[in-house]
Length: 489
Image (cartoon, rainbow, N blue to C red):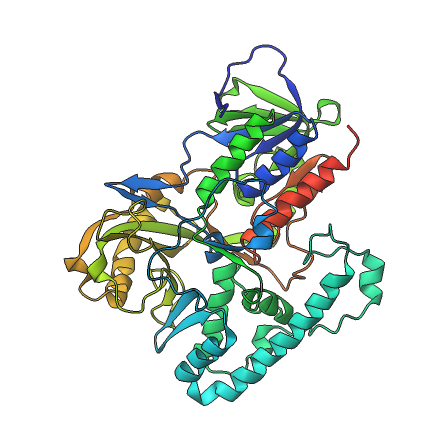
């Protein structure tokens, strides 16, 4: 893999067709497509950011949502990477009873089986007084799913469903039969516990906290488990590294940098990217922003009005702070799944360790943890703002109290808890693990931050389709590549 350190330039810099700032999945998808079209493409990679952490035979991989741990086969085919990125199925796995993840509420524990009859058994056991209401709600989601399937059948095969592919006028004149209400109205007569159950599923699939999710989006995400094949235990870091190798083998260039000082758009209709320290710069005809939007919006100075407006539309509400724990297998309660989301108190906000995303390495997988032990990644919501290092330290007590509630006698079976990775990496401009909020309702098939920011500046990242998770990243990368590919050189 060709990775160059930041060069010192006193001469006129090389001009590229496309510069991509950041190396997340969406940018890599666009980069591979463009470099295969014989375009000169430069990836600028933050040299100090690390996407994983290893210690004492354990390997930890932070994540933004559960879609980064499992993906539908049809979506995986859209990623230009063919090497083996899956974990081998372990002895004792039970095909046919696959569970997406587990939701733990103060008064309920639900396995999200992909098979509907098994899921029905779960909600009838945990919500017996509402089982008929819940049955009716899921029947409505089934009806909406059929409408979405019919809409998809009418769009061209190359379209990026569920993103709008028709003209504005035809969308405006058409009636698709999809409900217009959101979860706030549709679930108003349900218990607080069941409403939280639906909300936690939604934020587990994507990266958006909302007071009301559109019912068609709920159907798209919650019923997306059925029918299509799934790839479990996706190692997103291996996928990303494989795509970087494919990009460089195809002629792409990648440079490690400390950061970007500013971006100017004066140069012959192109873009100039100036690196920190003023020692080097790169020019290109197009620029793709592929890191969290809020960390890039200040690069354009007074000319960044469009980015500033978009930055006010969608903001990071929480940062996901990961804590890495090495624990003994005997600490795992019977029936606990490898992926789970847990909320301790429905009356409290998400921060303070009250809500946790948990990922356990597979039992017996010595690539992730030593024999007889498991790697546990516990991710807590931390309100954005203030000093990340101080906040991570303060958060640890709340996280450990929550974990001790889930894992009885954990203190007797814990090897270590490590927060150092979070304290260092959360300061990086490449850090991607955020949850967002928007000012008002949103049209889920349109997206939040547009793919094209200005004449030759594009954006692909979580903020395009923050509610679609990994599917949204794949869509945004493909759309940016398509948009630039269609432009004349």
